[in-house]
Image (tube, rainbow, N blue to C red):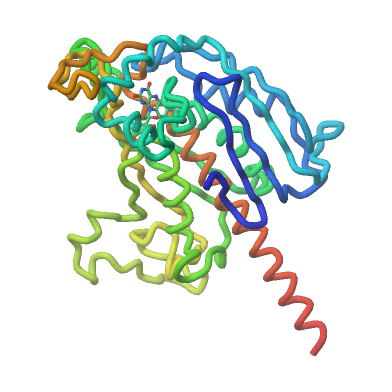
Length: 337
Ligand SMILES: Cc1cc2nc3c(=O)[nH]c(=O)nc-3n(C[C@H](O)[C@H](O)[C@H](O)COP(=O)(O)O)c2cc1C
């Protein structure tokens, strides 16, 4: 469904070309200081504007409808609504006959028996990631200043030269994917549960919820599979459990080990491309050529780093609250015996 987390529970709603998108947060502790400016700063990092991003610029005007009183969380459910602007819905009428290859026009129609809102990808649109970014601001506040989460676009296609590769691709009226690397510092050991609620499985679930993600790897990831144990093992080198390397990406047995948590995210090339591609016309029942109209990101991976950091913060804030309750219970139990 549309919710994530147990103690810090986040639900998102809205459509790309509806009135707006938004987020509901249940379980955010009371008394956390938050300003509109902090939310604005985070949203600005997701907004297009750089080369290779869509000309559909949204101002991301938002309203905090509940849960914040006198610039502090009140403990009540938080609801933040972000207005949609700059919509051109006629751009999407073509998807009925010629659903975009690689996109979810057809799967959404089939799943929702044709009742879905097809405009701009409807409820599946990357637009909803604005709501995730807002939730991330609250989650980061729960985690506190001593935890840092940074994500960076490290590759576009097979190139490290991000600007040049995007520029070349745009000239070909095509699109391109990329790889984002996220590094998280300051997470103490003991967060995460073995098996179904491992840190990896929860982060991966949250990251795969971002539209257009096609892969996630932790630590040495797929390269690690090529190593021998003697090369892969992160050797303990002192009594503080300092390690010689971090091939495990800061997680052992699904539990944080206190080292930097590192993961990489593969983002697909944007499905909506301006150059002609062969597809099927389902109304005329014949092969057709599609040149996707509308305004699209040539490389939407450019806009994903802040989203990846935000969803990582959501997952970690949830685990952090769970861990605090486990520690509190342990203290309580120790004081009784
Ligand atoms: C921030 C962001 C912006 C996006 N912009 C576009 C876009 O302009 N055009 C497009 O076709 N897809 C775009 N996408 C990707 C689609 O939303 C995604 O491919 C689609 O919803 C289908 O989901 P799937 O790729 O996970 O199958 C964007 C995704 C994100 C996260």
